[in-house]
Structure formats: structure tokens, C-alpha cells
Image (tube, rainbow, N blue to C red; front, side, top):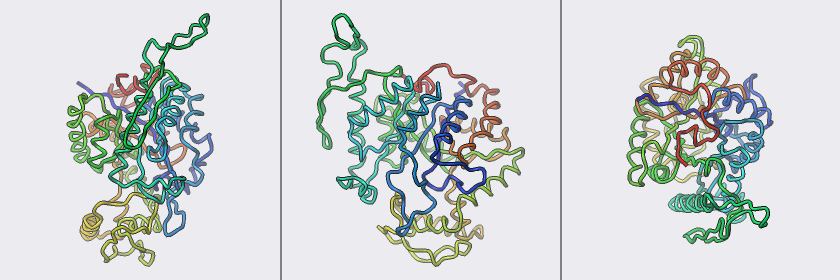
Length: 438
């Protein structure tokens, strides 16, 4: 049976994807930019529009580098505004479970779900570093082992709140002066991190409850997604790696009584389209060189080496030193579990290809990317889905806000011709777009 491709649009701003210095780039924070990208995604009948979250600007030796957008508005506020100017597009917000309480989370996301007519999604993320936690009164520090425990408990409670209304609880009896049955919305929960009880103030939206997205490739993250997520947002460097990840996560679902169709695997990708494959390759090379400047290459290498590498020439060879474990030379970014093996891999690749430090960063940190003519891109994307390397993709454009225009105008029509992507929305809720049950 031919699978349908699922697509989402990511508004970049965290990490060095965005080429903000490009002449075609516009504001990263004006509402017009969000509206343009969302309108393009809806014109392309994408499943949802996805916003990341940055709770603290990342620092490199105490300075703000170009890996973050200064002044990015809060996600749920932006998406609430977009709900008024879109009609079908899903609206997904990244909200941190470490620094938010379950009741507050449940109500804010359920509010977006109502405002949008059942199009909201919550991307559940965690944070364990004290650097980010300094922005919050209680410090926010959680040991790595505890962050998923809190996240799982938070998600369980949030879902309990969303499900606290029965189908026949909403009465709306004006004569009797009541709007709901007795006991409506009642909840109580005691756990390691939370102990709450009360009544939830919002009935279910048209889609029942918001979609849950989870991002994480670790073993713990995969299990977390398999246990309760509707979509997993991931990264794969190759077709083979995508197939391996896909099988591993799908195989975990049975343990939680779930079917393979209940979880959509959608890796983050970039797409570069041009008239010919050769032109697209050259265009992609130029984009990557803009994304990874010399200073950015040094910063990304410092994250792995854990030491100050400012004395190194980014167009020279890789550093010869060993990594420093537990370094805080770069703050606000997740570290690497085994930097020594990564450095070994980088050195072998650099020696084999004659790469400089910057060239190594460009080639070794590539996100899965589709590069080519519209025909080539459509063929490869379809192959990944039909051969179980993914259920779809979250497209991360390098330009704001026009980075999706070429893809929607030139690739989407080809996917529609092959009957692997919708020509129009069949339903009005995000769950209907994703083919998920309530």
C-alpha cells in the first residue's frame, strides 16, 4: 500500500540554520515573517507549522554568538495569532516540561487548541543544565537522569487534565443555569515531582486533545516517544540511519500497546531545489558556507572539544588536543556523550578528504538534506517514506520567511501527481491531517 507523506514547516531561529545575513532574509521576529511562512505551508497543505523554543540565549565564552535569534517571541503567543490567519494548518509549540507546571501547560496548550479549532500540538522538551535554569527562580537544575522522569510525569498529568471531561459533560442548560455535569473536569494526581488536584477549566477541542510531539534520539528519548508521543521529531544523517531509527522506534510501540500507525516519525531536513541537480549542489554548497562561517566552525568545534579553540585557523587543520570533559566553554547547548569518538571520526574524515576544520564541520554536521531538481527531490523524499526511513519530514528552511516558496511551488505538485501527498485538506484538525485517532 502506498504511504502518504506527512510534511511540517519549521520556523528556524535556534542553531545556525538561518542565514540571517543573506540579502533575501527578513525579520526573525516581526509577525509578518511568521505569517508568510505559515501561509506558504498552508498553501502547500502541510500538516503543521512548528516553532522551537529558546529559554536562554546561548553563550560562547560569555558572548552571544550568531547561533541564536535575539528577541524571538514566545511560541504559544505567536501561534495564537497565527490561528486567526490560517484555517487548516496545525500549530505546534515547543514548551519546556522542566520549567513549566502541568496545569499551566495543559491550559495554555488547550487554549490554543480551542482558538484554532483543534489544530494545536505540544512539542515536549526537557532541560537539565543549570545555565538555562538560572533564568528561573528555583534554579531549574535537574540531573540528567531526572529530566525524563519529570517530563513523563508532566505529560501524564497534562493528558489526564485534557481527558478529565467526558463526552456528555458539556450540558449548556440555560434554563437550569448550568453548563456542565457535576464533577466535570475533576482530577487528582500524586507523583515524584507533582501533587495536584482540582478541576480543569476547558472541555475538549474538536480534535479531542492536542497532538504530542517529542524530540530526542537517545534510548531514553525513543522510549519516551514510543510510550506516549504522536510524532517524533528526529535527525538522521543518511537513508540507512533513518531506516535503522524507524525500525527501532516502531518496534518499541507494541510494548505500550500501540500500533505502528499511532506514531509518525518525521526527521528534520533541509531542501535545496534548482533547475538541475548540478545547480542545486552548487547552491547547497553556498548555503552551507553561509551557515558555517569561520567563527561558527570554531564555536561548533569548541562544543565537542570543550576547550577554547580561538587560536586555531578555521581553514587550517583540526585541533590536536584531546577533549575536555565537563567543560562550560559553550553554555546553553547540549553536550556530547562521547566526544572522543566524534573527534576520532572527524580526524579520519578530514585526513581522507583533505578537509580543513571548517570543511569538516560543514560535512560532518550536515542535517539530512534533499538536494536536486524538483524531480530528484520528489523522488528521494518519496523513497524515504515508501521504504520506511520516515513517515514524513519537518522542513527547516535557511531563509526567513521565503525559504519554503520554491519547495511548495515546484516539488509539492510532483508529489501530488504521484498521489503520495494531499491536494487539499480532508479534515479540519491536526489529528485528521496526521491520520491519528483521538
